[in-house]
Image (cartoon, rainbow, N blue to C red; front, side, top):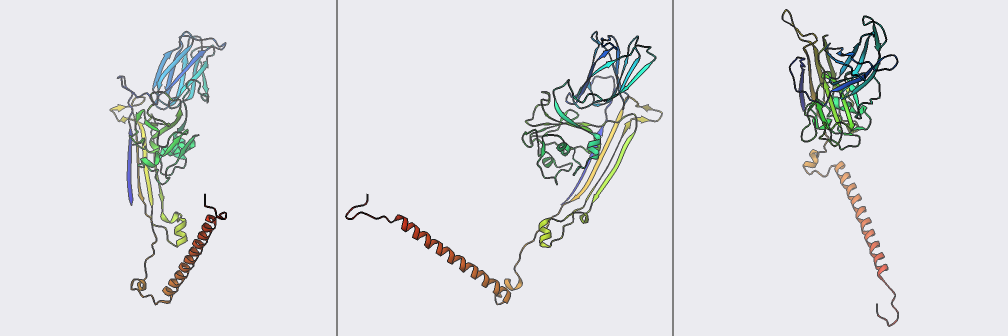
Length: 386
């Protein structure tokens, strides 16, 4: 049986002024407090959140308590810029916002001129104190570089604690919805999980993912075990929250392929024992991805505004198997029982059968004697059985 499968993934997020309806299931958030060197609140500070990849920006002002909040933040890597009169310009890069992650930061300003700047590069806190949701994020590097039989992103959930895949590992390809959904999360039922892509449910009536995206087209996958928001719902197990990649101001792409040939595979134990060679079962997998800003020479420049990302994957998979059956020889088909080999086999079978019958007969006689001995009772003289 030969399988051919291709998958084309297109992501085209457009940033514009029009109001659009968004799903709520994958957005994160950034909140924090603007403080001076004495830990006092700084009110009225301009706080700007800038996506380092796309250059898109959002701005707000700190409250009288020095607090600021950015909600519905698309998961990405951001830079935070703070400007306030009497303080140096503050800039912190490398703030990573994951799927449904609420990042909380306390940022301190230094006294000085606004023309002066202070740059801070540090990782966000590993312990998320702003959200009780439990889960682990698998980023693009983990998804694309770790070994993955079948190139199925959901099978990498085995890296997460309390996740047990129980399906056949041979059926984890991009169209194997049943095999790749046989997963138990945190002791939940097998195939009792829910799947989201960019906040859109893709789970069918049998709790299978109807779409299995290419690894190259994924930005991250968050596996959530429990205590997630009520908006997830519809599951007695866990949640696969997948975010697709988006283009940036820079162009990036990939081209890949790998081969598997029959001569590189190992034969099965029973085939080796029976002297049966391995059957032909090659596999060819290849694909490509490319993304960036939309740019039309002399017509349109989508820098910081419009982006695209394309992902394509294809494979040719041949599966075959072999079996061994015993068939009668020409002499047996013609009832030629005078053959010495056939006669010796029949004679040995008769001897084995005769011995078996004799042993069964001896066992039955012994059992009858025991029954008779146990049923015989000595009665008193002249008495009657009671």
